[in-house]
Length: 43
Image (cartoon, rainbow, N blue to C red; front, top):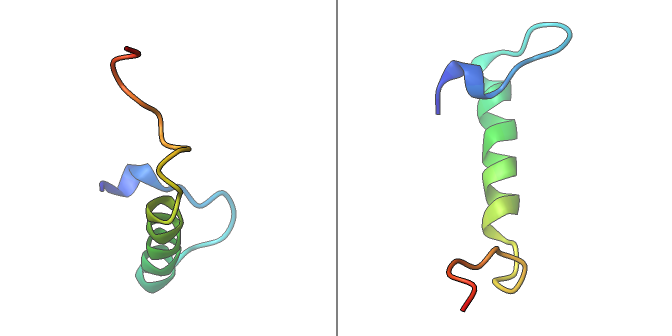
């Protein structure tokens, strides 16, 4: 992940705050049920 992947619109986020929100987003993405995940191949 590069610094440009997340942008703070207002104020200033400390590295710890960016790490916390990144961990939250990654955990939510990993918790998605498999049937919601897009499939490849269509066949």
